[in-house]
Amino acid sequence: MNKMLSKKVIGYTFTLLFILIISGVALFQIVTNLYVLLAVLVIQFIVLLLLLFHFFDKYVKPIDKVTETMDKLLKGNYHSRIHQPMSGSIGELSTKINSLARSLSELTISEQIQAEQLSTVIENSESGLVLIDEKGYIHVVNRKFISMFGKTPHDYIGYLYYDVLENEQIHHTVQETFLYEKHVKHLFSLSKNDEKIYLEIVGAPIFNERNMLKGAVLVIYDITEFKNLEVMRKDFVANVSHELKTPITSIKGFAETLLDGAENDPEARKQFLQIIFDESKRIQHLIDDLLILSKLEKDESAINVDPVEVGFVLDEVLPVINQHAEQKKIDIQVDADKELIFEADEEKIKQILLNLLTNAISYTPEKGTISLAIKDSEENVCIQVQDTGIGISKEALPRIFERFYRVDKDRSRDTGGTGLGLAIVKHIVEVHHGEIKVESELGKGTTFYVFIPKEQAE
Ligand code: ADP
Image (cartoon, rainbow, N blue to C red; front, side, top):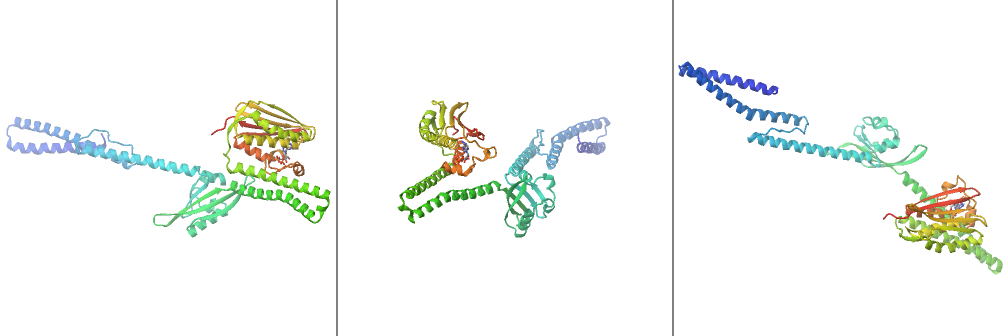
């Protein structure tokens, strides 16, 4: 029994005694027989006691329970309920209080879920986020921001932004956002682990419902990849222009010489026309390779997957390759599971073989040997092209798949290379979700391994 309840019990007992004394004094005036008076008083006492108990059990206890539950609810314990069965209007009140408590607890749960969702979004955002109030204090920094600028959230939260953020550009962005009360955007770079990272920062003001400035959100995007791509694109355009310039200058020069009178000398004419023809072939080769690359990049998933039979592909590729090999008296040894069938884009697999075998011939001296093996290797088909050629140095090896990279520019030009062959091979392997590896030793030879999954994912 709680304190309030015991106080009430004492109060009601005194009331009962008071009623008994008053009625006893009143009855004493009317009833003269002492026994009758005592009997009346005892009966009256029992009736009053029963009434008091009934009243207490039906009204006082339930109201007390309701008050107690309301107190708990007010203190934020929304799991509190009235379990005692009650009837009448107090029963109705307790049902309503229970359903109010249920709604409150549902509301808190959904609020908690919302808050958790919001903090998950903020924490896992791919951009750095900082929330600053109108006085300049930092309230939120997310994981990405920490990964960009280091330290821990405790080093930022609760501090003035200009005390803890070292970057001047961030200070400018906050100041301008507060000053102009509109979105502000800036670009800047940082040096991190000896690497330059490029960042874009956007400051956005926050207003309350009365349109008064309440703070600012800073969003910081890492645009390094985008910047690098831009640099790569510029390099690519410069490289293509450079690659085209050499043969075009040559064609122009020899055409001019012919026009200036060399056409009358049959020998010079033949020689110059041959050069013009060779250079135009080079341009055509370059443009063909560029078109293959751009097609591959435009729609990476656009491969026509069909069952490819190894024997069939070899019948198409080997005659072309043998023709080149014969000119250099190079022996080509083939060891292939001709019946092996796998899922791939047939034209692109032919392209891989053509490029790797052409390179093997180009970079192998006369009378060398080239081995081609196509084998079943668990989930993959393994294509292996090995030569006994000049080999590639350790330093150059990681770069040979870059566009326009050549170990020896003049040698590549002499063999009619565009510097794009291996970039194309790598791209084709990637669109087939495969892998390419290379081993090489200077003066001994090179081996390329290509693994293509036998089954292509939809
Ligand atoms: P290229 O058209 O110049 O052959 P690739 O992209 O096919 O261009 O090859 C890039 C460079 O890799 C070549 O210039 C060459 O230096 C080197 N390379 C490729 N294949 C071989 C090989 N089998 N043996 C030696 N060097 C090779």
